[in-house]
Length: 290
View 1 (tube, one colour):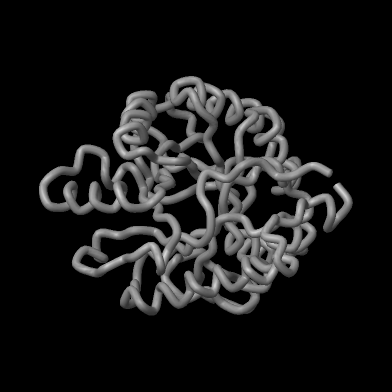
View 2 (cartoon, rainbow, N blue to C red; view 1 turned 120 degrees about the vertical axis):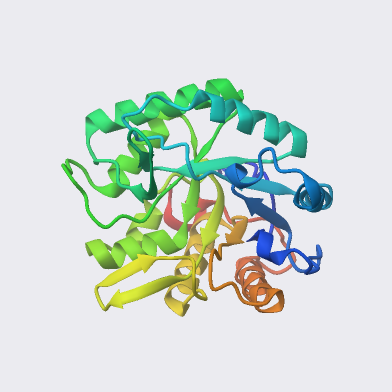
């Protein structure tokens, strides 16, 4: 019976933001932390010292903002090398990025959809392989929210799986993005989950979003996680075991105790998949026959 691969971190995590300076975060509250490397590379002074205190106390992962893996522009190899050094300096466990693009002759300050085409699969996979060659380690690509699918030749799931396979990279599973896309593009979220390669999942994200309309959800990371997303996260755990999962909150950030309540809910969802005293995650094939 095939087990999923080793995770870089364990438990329930939280995105660390500069606005949290002055608040106390303890290992009893969160198991690991995440930052965007672009926001911290080269930062010194009191922010740099504060960040170093956290990286010495907690396991860290990083989630990039500006790799722009699907862009027509040349790959920013200087950024990749800076991230490689940053990971070494702070003992970072995993680097993830968005399966999208955000630049064309300059940054566009938004995550735009890569066309779901065979040509795009080959193009993106080649760029991911180059990133991994520079880093000398694997990268995890995140399934992103999108609001249009220009030139679509295959489904989102087919495109995602094809890129992961050809690039031989890992997956950052964003549960809220699956929920948002399932509503906006009218597909079944649980079927999407079941079609993902369990062995490539490194960790997961969960977040809140904005209801623009009944059939239009916008991924914002600016609100609490809603019950249907918690239910989808629980389903992911039933399929894949208790994946390390991080709570994202990028604005409208409440006091830390309120954020930690959501982190504790992640822990409760994870605990619900254990069988009695056996603390081993259920392998995905035991749930849906892979």
